[in-house]
Length: 173
Image (cartoon, rainbow, N blue to C red; front, side):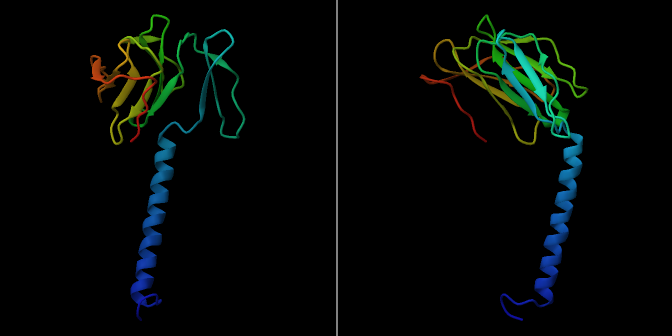
């Protein structure tokens, strides 16, 4: 058969695609079971503390949980898939970059200061295929600044990327 036919070659191609697609779907299901598969919501409460809720598998929501951190910026969050950790970043009362993270068992770390001087909201990006997290923010000098968390979980020193910002940076992969 010619183009667009349904001969043996086309049937084998369709079988291959369906088999391959089925394997991909199976791999996705397995990966999804191995990572945190809940929606976690964060918001500032009327007390200016960070509050959180997560969605249960039946679609209902957990009760509010206060994380007892007082950000002075919007909260950035990223999930580090390779280690099943959810990490929050925000500007603290001292204008430094602060973080908290959720462990795989659902408990939360204490607040930790990473460093720097923020003059805006941080953004966080996980580098695809790694456990590396890159943070960007407008520094006290108005330029783009960055920290990165390596595969071992250690933070770099602050990097001054430069530029003159009139707002917060945005990063895309």
